[in-house]
Length: 267
Image (cartoon, rainbow, N blue to C red; front, side, top):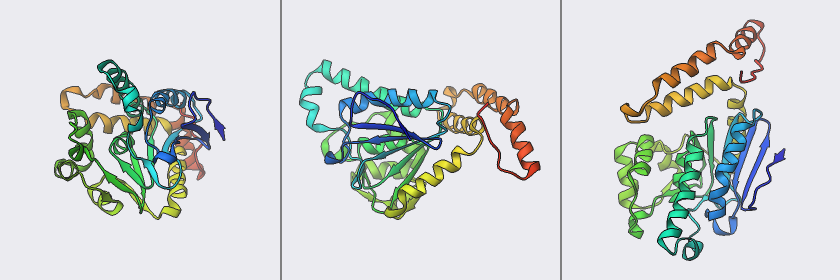
C-alpha cells in the first residue's frame, strides 16, 4: 500500500491493489469535514485520476461511528464569519464536490454509521453506495432553516426519485439502512462486520474489468442524468469507439477464447 503526502492529517489517501482509498479522518468529530479536508479532496482526486494503477476509488470514514456527519461547524466562526470568508469556504466545498463528481473512474462510498447533511451530499457524488446495517442517513436542513439549492436536490432526486427526495427534505428525520435501500439511496446493505470486506471485494471486481468500458458506461449514465439540452452524447460515442479500437478489446476476445482471466491495461 502506498500513501499520498497531503497537507492535512485529517484526510488519508492510499492505493492498494488497483483501489484508491479516500479516508475522512476526524473520528473524534464523527468525520465532520473541515476546511483543510475540503481543500485536500481535489488534490487526491487529481492524483488518483492521473495514476494508471488506480482503477476504482473508495471513500470512507475513519472509525466505526460515522462516514461523514456533515461540515465541521466548530470552525464556522473563523472560516465563515464574513461574506468574503463564506465565499472562500463555498468555493472550497464546491471544488471538492465537483472533483468527486467529475472523477472518470468508478467511485464507491463505503458508509458506516452517520451519513448526515453534507456527508450524504458527498455520498451522492459516488457511483455506488455500500452501507452497513447500522448506517443512518438524514438531511436536517429543515430543522436548521437552511436553504438547499436546485443542484443538490436534483442530484438526490436523480437517485431516489421525486417523492423520496421530498420525504427526506420535508421530514428532516433519520432513515436507517433498510429504508435507504428501499429508496434506492444505497446499492447494498451488509452487516457492519462485513462492510470493508464486501466493499473491497466489489472494488476489486470492478478493478479487474476493462477500464475503458467502465469509463464509457459511467459517462453514458451521467449524461443520461443531465437535462436533455446539456447532454454530450458525442463524447460518449467517442468513448465507445475507443473501446472497440483498444488493445483491451483484443485482450478480452483472446481471454474469452482461451478460457482465462483477461489482463486489461486500460488502453
